[in-house]
Image (tube, rainbow over all chains, first blue to last red; front, top):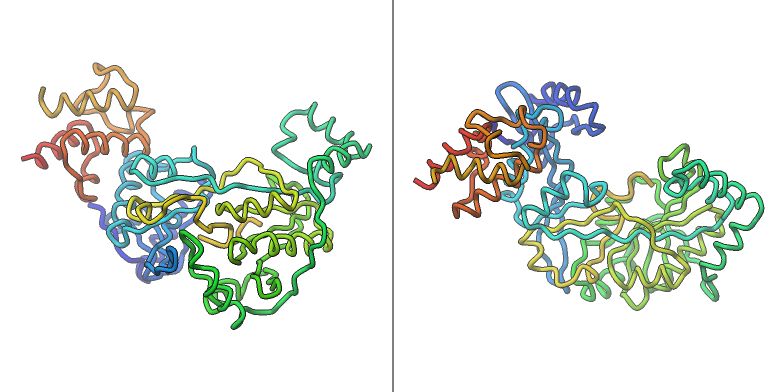
Length: 339
Length: 77
């Protein structure tokens, strides 16, 4: 008989054994006990688990408790005797907190988003936008475009001949009159003011006051950009090595940001100029809110295929009028991983 | 139609398998298309059909067509 319970110290060995059994799947459950980590126990064995990350969200200025449904794992992925466990975990999580969301998940066609959809959750692909800064590197490395040998050869030729650069520049509008933001070491009173003044404008947004941001980004290798009094951005500058999407490119990303929606172009413009001046090959961003998508497009970004999915439980869905009014990006959920 | 027959019919629709190939003893291990997502779809379909919502402990017992029917029968009294 399976019982779902908090992960306490005495189950550490059983969680390790569980991870060994499901290792071929590519995901592992965190090995350290924590009160918000739940495990599915079957006798002496652990057969699955999930994590709840409790957060405060604001809906047009009204705070509500919400939780991120993280890393649900079930032995059902390697043993069909446990096919029901995924649903048990989800129902258990909904009893802990009916206002749940999921983020990322690898695309709407994956098992978890399909399960969530079947259970009446709302699902949206968070738009992925990109802007090429160095065309030759982009054309040589971008993996989804290089699926066939013929395409690979054509893109290498375009990269070396300069034809690719001409083509890409025709598709992108350059930035004019945009000043770069200033790098800061931490968020402070100014960030609280940005939060206080901008958050009521969003249909839904996770808390982003100075204390929350410093706790979340304190140990991460992220660059904090303050853009005047308008807002801020978290940007990353990462040298990839054999990445399945980006090859060996140097990828800049606008992982997180905040400003009142009308000021989004100013913040995006500053973040993009900053990353371009650092010499990244490509700049990417996932943004759900319409104002941030428009700001990126206005800065010359193009929309690409997205496997970054936002899912909202039925209860959470009741508070979300339109997905385009939800401020959600790579700073949400697990934060800017894989970037 | 008995509860068992209704469960077999629902499973046939969702798993895309001829009804005669689904027996009381059928389990996910025996039917390739019976994965976690289709298991969930089957349970949700039965919840709609019978106007009930199963508890996690009840879902855990649903390891074969016959056991699903037993849980449904107990639930609807």
